[in-house]
Length: 261
Image (cartoon, rainbow, N blue to C red):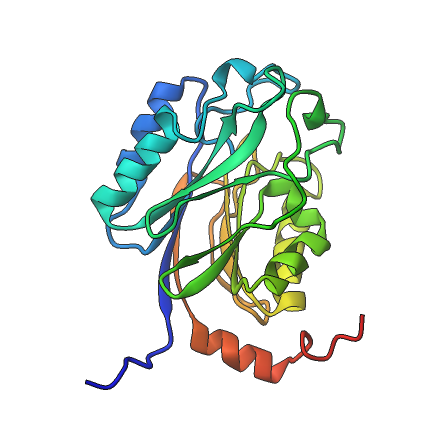
């Protein structure tokens, strides 16, 4: 039998749902909200336990990446035969300032510690959390796609997206808790499309819903077209991405090949 040369396709589900202040209830939501008909299911940042009031001490809710939350992510991924990505607070060397971490379970097993902490718009995330290392960047393989991981405020730093693409990423995931406010939806939409266009990659971003956060989870293709987008309500956003579209986009706009710096 000749080898299968069909370009890879990936069915993505972005779960735009609020996390609460009770970790056990949030763990139950993983099974309730993970669909069984997707290849990749993405939950928002801090899904294991919400940040709480601005500046709150979240250290009591930090866990190891082998702890109850990540274990449940793994169980649900296996049960639904998919790959699940979700955000949590991870214990680290400073017990008072945990990491803001994404865990990946299913076709790949990985974790990513948020590099850029949200010290902006009047917030000081670094007072309560520890930044992750700047290297190596985290890229995993899911369904034939190379998938790079970023978290929320990382989106404002194009050099991280480019480093992920240089490491082979064809799809960037951005779980987030993008705080609502003036211009924030516009910034979110603009930056997601910019990261897709400048890197000719797919971008899939799962945000927590309103009213505290902006929602607007979306999937963007490598030429900047929005394939699917939510409003600010709790919902699941679905889209299918394929490597043939990425190849065509890079032929149309070979900006990566044309770089001189």
